[in-house]
Image (tube, rainbow, N blue to C red; front, side):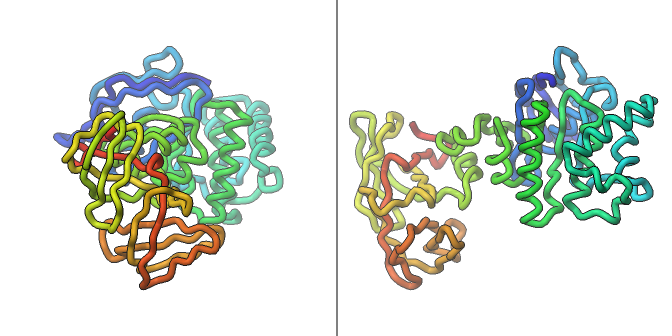
Length: 360
């Protein structure tokens, strides 16, 4: 295990800047997830830690070593790729031990480590099979096993589950979480799937356009986002963002009126930074609608999705910003009818539409 620290990390390809001066500290034994939309720089940042990309500026420390200009093989990291990257002509056992064999380790030691990794990943019965004889989930376990046998200081995962179907993704997600607990290893994991991030991470790093938007524990980012981007990215379905105007402020609270939906003005507590007359964006999570709430929105329902344990009603389904309402069991909402959705104002968020920053 080892700490990982990035200082003023920059990466450019020609004249195009991809990573913009990132500072980040990862504690030994932490499971950290880089998350963000395609093109945000999360995989590039991971490859910089691995040494597969050369930093334009800044420093990378693993433990107390500056590894910025050190070769990948000497950094003490092991990487698991999206594509498995297994040798088709080798058995599972040979694939898992290949890296150690090529670095001149004793065959007996290689065998011991392979057997130990196979036991952790439940691959004992598959050691003599070739990759073509394995399922997608089994191939990914072999790729993880190849990393385990190296006993690295840091494990790096680059979207390892994106090639798997939904059921296998859930299974592998649980296995990776258990693996982290068993090994107590430092792990950095890249994904665009915020569900993976929420369920796996000790700490999430939300990236956009090569910059860190916010760092924190999953539930902290969910419950206390710094800006509209983080609020909309963390949580599924995404948060509703509704245009509004501040009507009055008093005693650290703001009374707002929605612009596009029929609603009586409501007062959001804990808001000291709003000004009367200011245009704002109100954020309400779909799951925070509650029949017992003291505030209400009237909306015409277009579509209802029934997902078994939960249902969602949508208003303005054809627009870029539909209103999504989480329904409770036995709710009376029906398509093509006007529905009154209640919520507690204390669960609403307030954002500045110009900067995107949270108004607190």
